[in-house]
Amino acid sequence: MSETDGAVGPEEVRHVADLARVGLNEDELDRFADQLSDVLAYFEALDDVPEVDAEPELTNVLRADEERDCLDREAALSNAPEREDGYFRGPRVS
Amino acid sequence: MSELGAFITREELSGAGSGPLAGRTVAVKDNISTEGVATTCGSRMLERYVPPYDATVVERLREAGATVVGKTNMDEFGMGTTTETSAFGPTRNPVDRERVPGGSSGGSAAAVAAGEADLALGSDTGGSIRCPAAFCGVVGIKPTYGLVSRYGLVAYANSLEQIGPLARSVEDAAELLDVLAGPDERDATTRFDSREGGHPAAGADYAAAADGDVEGTTVGVVTDLVEGADERVIETFHDALEGLESQGAELVEVSLPSLETAVQAYYVIAMSEASSNLARFDGVRYGPEGGDGDWNEAFAEVREKGFGDEVKRRILLGTFALSAGYQEKYYEKAQDARAWVKQDFDSALEEADVLASPTMPVLPFELGEGLEDPMRMYLADANTVPVNLANLPAISVPAGTADGLPVGLQLIGPAFGEEAIIRAASAVA
Image 1: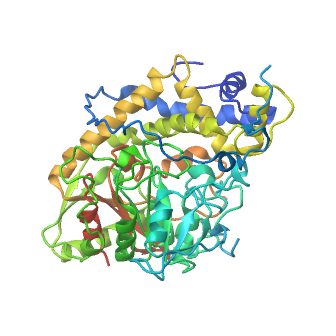
Image 2: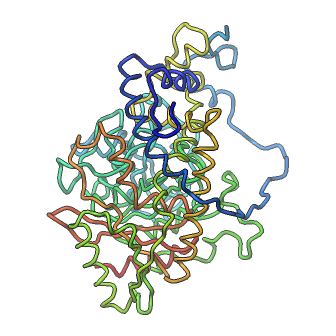
Image 3: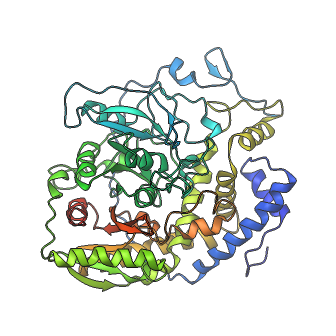
């Protein structure tokens, strides 16, 4: 990718889609390459933003680590496409 | 769906017998969780998702006596300016059915404008309450970040979004805000433990602020957000300002140089957060079933089937902006641009009590007009996204019409200055 115009090609779109685990067909790769290039070119203007010293106000709002009620297992599993023995069932890992 | 397509699900949830909203009907955007009632986010990914719990705002509505009448259509996961990216078809604008209602809370605004509900809840990440309010000719409030609990809101970009009210009058919207605002131990951003007086909503009376008294109020016109707008929009905007002036408000001009890169910063941040938030949609805990491949293949397949084009684009761009070698160039620069916008707003709000701009720089689009041109849609958000970057409150109130189409006036206030913008908005004819 060129540092100046923000253009990306279908191969770069495929790489990013793999990172994001989003399947795309050939048509989508070409179309998204064009559209993403336009948007990334637009983002180039951020190069000129000055550095800003920001001091966010942060407050610790952690609660006491005490046991409390939460969703029961049946409710938590209620939307799962597949389950087994009270657990979510996912795809194989290799 | 109704003729307008305002609702994805029509189902009644009754409220407590009495309370400040007793007898009122409320439409709820379909990214806000309702126990036992489908919450789709306008996506195939969640077409059959039924939340096992209520969002805090839904609990508050029902405790206040309101009746929920259904779940409203929206751009998929809130990603859009027209409500056309919904997997369930577009919503039509009740004012002109060949036009979009704005987005992403288009169903909520259309339902209120058409009288299908008295009030509605929307969510606003970069203008998603104010844009449809402006396009449909109703009132919408984006509260200060931290005023309203986001517990049970399906996350798109957590650092930017707030749930807020839509209504046909400023007073009705303010009354609903009175019910929604307050601390929630389940959303840490609503916690103000060390602040004197506690949560900013304590002691506030938003409905009472809608008294129309703008005598002596200084209204800062944000020139940067007026210049590029459609001339018909500008004309209506100025007429509304003159109305405020005639009631004793003082107009001044302000300019915020940081607004030049606000849209870029907004999209980099929103897309980056979205790419992380939407990683949870993998077909294991909810969503369509994956194929027989290994986990990488199965997840990619579920996400290919479940997400529409605009959601895919934003996930890809967000993943790109956060990927090795680009994080500094995009994400970190966007954070600088965000801090710059905050500083500029702070200075401008030292010169004026509230700031004003047209809510949208354009009149409502025709259906289908912008679907193939994402950049054009992103630019339409120029006037609303800076407010989310700065965590500030803003209201869109009908300013009048141009060519028979509604034009919205946006009023922006200081952090937790909801009463000031409600007061000024209530003086707009």
